[in-house]
Image 1 (cartoon, rainbow, N blue to C red):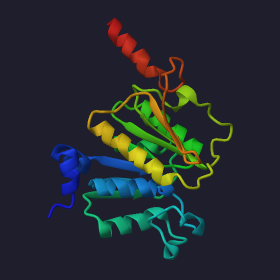
Image 2: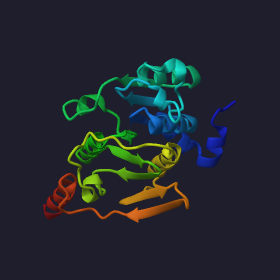
Image 3: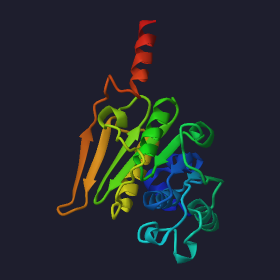
Image 4: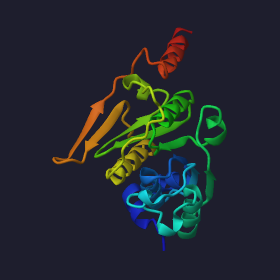
Length: 243
């Protein structure tokens, strides 16, 4: 019996095979990270690197779906790796119990497909800069704050966070996360599907608000020619066209 027969019927054999062979890094194994990981596993993804330095606390249990009371005090990556290895057929699983910083990001993140499931702005801008300086990498950005969320696909040739967001003075500030993590993960996973099937829409961010009335909006983000992070791509392309 093919566990993913329904996926094959809907998406086709080629897409399911691409999912299974994709090397995926998930940065942040909290609410969004757990939900995104589960959706990717159910799609048939088999090759993961998980990154998180936090331990599980009781306040995590209302939204971080892989953890329970017996896991409190343990490292998230330790618990996640054991649980998904037990329940899913994986080809590769690596995990890192350390904080991503500028000095180690090249050493830790080797995969080209990266999911930003973090809850602090410093790491989000670091991942944004990392992808914008690597030709082959793609970032599926997500952000959640109270009842609001946003997702966006970022590559070197697209608009990035620095095109339209001002970096905060305190980049370690954490966001106030309550309910929208599952919604964020659904949309983040759909962006991944759009990307691997060739339907990625450049320079679009999806915003949603789960307060009544519920709203979902797609907003065009213009690539900023003066962006401190991604303008180098346009400059490189301009030089190539002249030569």
